[in-house]
Image (cartoon, rainbow, N blue to C red):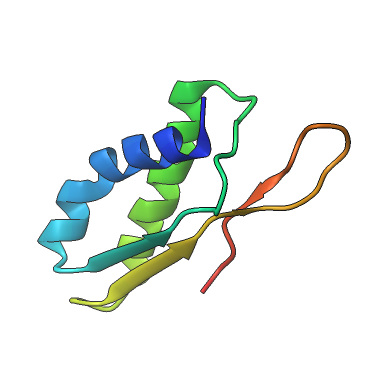
Length: 85
């Protein structure tokens, strides 16, 4: 599964609560595709939970901004990061 697919699934899950709160979501994907070695349902749940928490703790009509990036790891794996704002 790719990081982009996991994030897209999470956004679909959290989209309604983001819209109800009047928030704006901006997402900066990594420059190159990143493959995830993870259960696709679970990792999408993890990202959806992060988005739901961001909605909960962001002032009404606020902006939720996320940037995903990879960094060099061992072998052919690159750990993915979602830095905090």
